[in-house]
Image (cartoon, rainbow, N blue to C red; front, side, top):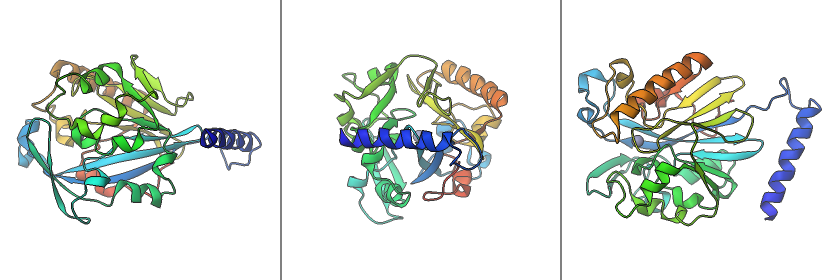
Length: 290
Ligand SMILES: [Zn+2]
């Protein structure tokens, strides 16, 4: 309660500061976008209807993002290995079991909490949580953020908590969200998180029932779309290939076409979250994009 009041007071102060030109340059506050490294995921290109020759790197990055806005702090995606289940130091190859029994391997990056702290934030400071979708490599630390307002498409929420959840999930990683009173079920094509158009969740169904991408409008960097798993490899985009495990290939195809139009219209850049080559080049927290 006190914490919320304090945050609101800070937001007001920030707004007042901006109104009096205390903030350098522009009057519109730009969010800050922090890139959090979730390690390296072993992959097989055949799952994406590609061959190793089609890609520069077979392994995939795992990424989460912290978006800091005057009206709140949004975590986008929650990693592949929860901090509390880490089996070794940075570089350790962790084995994970999906709900359907398939195993996956992730080479550990520093813990999510340590990266948040490096940027100056505690998990308790995160006010909003959004997951691009429910697959295990995007939900690992979701339970840590059960205090935050969870923005989730109704379709995705229904699939996550049905009697027989999808095989690519690890339901234990998001179980604390189940009875959260702080859940906002999304039903529209877009959800403007902070009400000023700078952080927008966009429907991009198909990979899962309610898969989404995130548009972030940054003052200096420009517009950025965080892909979720609409693509994994850049070659999916250039060669027009779909993964073999979509909930709806037709919906993914339509979502890709819609997003390409959006990118052209807004001149935004697409950041493919699993693209290891691009991910390596991004500045990581505590550095940020604004
Ligand atoms: Zn993924």
